[in-house]
Length: 304
Ligand SMILES: C[S@@+](CC[C@H](N)C(=O)[O-])C[C@H]1O[C@@H](n2cnc3c(N)ncnc32)[C@H](O)[C@@H]1O
Image 1 (tube, rainbow, N blue to C red):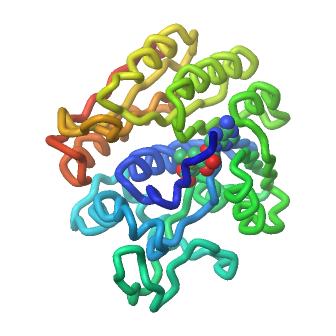
Image 2: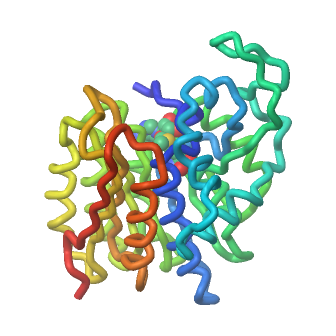
């Protein structure tokens, strides 16, 4: 079942949390001249028009990227992410098929007169940070999201895209020819089995490619599915440890509503823990969570 479309949620507090960590990990990979490889198992449509009917319907980006951009003082660790977002202008704008063009009438009868503001998803955040010999491998299963992303990536010889199941595809693809790298897994959690499937896929991939960094995003819900995920990640024998970073409302989510955003990072780069701690403490008070904000960070597995 593929009912999830990221266009409704792009730029929300979870994207800010996940993408600011993503940019920090990529910046670390850029420190060495040796090429790196990124595998993005759940890629989405690539970028999002925040004036589109989808984005305007939920308005989630207002409590995420817009709330952050509104602040005068930001933690130093947020700056590379914010610079990238502010500079982002899609090259293939003509292919946007969900945008609410100026003057369109939205579902609530509003007309959209504001200039469009674009938010890059993980494929274009990574693409912006690739160098000549780096590689990005994308997977996306939703037929329309796949086609949109395929048109948007256009011809970039550093990037490959497959319409493939990201959990199975990851295990089949590792280790890649370029041995330094990052795996980003950002499922849509349409079904609760996604938590266990994500953990099993990363555990299997880590057995074959133990030196990579793995980052899994997960929603924090009242139901507590994330507890099982933590238990599975505690068993990963990662030399670089397993770090957990969460921002969430202490209560106020309601049935099925997202309380917060979590990241599990296997083999995080040096000092990412300190950078993410600064970001999490700040985001907790700045983004719009459904209740009073709490920040949690800990090592589930200590680095050796
Ligand atoms: C949360 S969105 C990804 C957002 C993207 N990573 C970003 O940061 O911009 C999840 C995506 O995974 C896709 N998807 C769902 N199940 C999948 C699977 N088993 N394999 C690959 N993609 C899948 C969905 O169609 C959706 O586009």
